[in-house]
Image 1 (cartoon, rainbow, N blue to C red):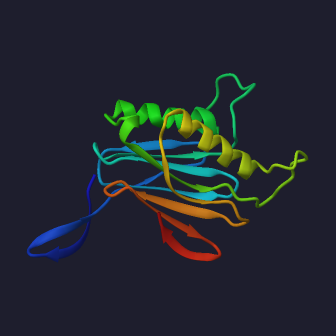
Image 2 (image 1 turned 120 degrees about the vertical axis):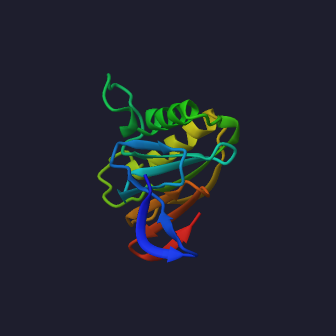
Length: 173
C-alpha cells in the first residue's frame, strides 16, 4: 500500500513507506519498503531480522525467555519460539538464514521482581542471543539493558533499526 502526502517532486507524488505496527507478542514480515514499528520495549526484546539479498525484513516483540511448560499458545510471546517463528516466516518469504542479520533492542531492568538474581530483561536477551546463534544469524547491532523503555522502527528498505528511548537521543543501528 502506498501512502501519498500530496507533495510533488518533478510532477510526481512522493510516497512514504507503509508503517506496519507490531504489537506485544506479535511478529510481522515484509518484502516491501515498509517500516515495521513496535513500542513498549521494557524488559521485552524487539528482534529485527533483515536479509539484504532478498530485501525481506521482519520484527518480533517477545515478552518472556522461553516457552517451557507452555503447550500451544502464542509462539511470538517467547524469545525462543518467537525468533523461530520470525525466521520461518522470513524463509517462507524467500529469505535465507545464511544472509540474515539481526539487530536487537530492549531487555531493560525496569521492574525486577525476580528472586533468582537474573531479571526478565537480561534472561530475554540471553535467550534471543542463544536462539539466533542456533541459526548462525549474527547480531550486527544492539541497544540492550539499562533501566529505560524503548520504541523501535525497522526500515525494511535498508535494514536500519532506529531506536528511540526516554533518556537518550534516537540512534540508528
